[in-house]
Image (cartoon, rainbow, N blue to C red):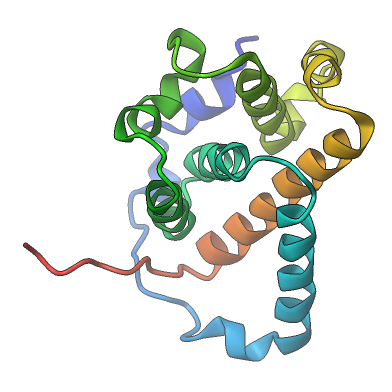
Length: 171
């Protein structure tokens, strides 16, 4: 089975045709002060882990693309751009396997992000982990895996509660 099969099966899936971008709970963050504090501490730990900010943003953005989380896509595109990420690399991220714009380290991280985000379909294959082992030391492997787990939790929170991303004023 193709790695992309889970995504392609969703295209045209009628369960998603009536999806509305109306928040199910307004300001859901106020209802989770301890959870938000814990997630913020986890994010601070990942940011201080020594992994490159640009790599973390690419991984978060790619997982958010797979999960269809508009809130997180907006957030991570905005953050990546603010930190100097190129527009072309952001545009090409969905096709990173076919683009020469990404380093071997980024490719390993992106493959691992896809494998863990699509865990039920992939089972976190050894081939993807071998790529990670070749590019990251053990501490980085753990922190990369934590970053992927964290963004998947954020995606599930935002998509599940239909959090709407900010809309920039027209220019």
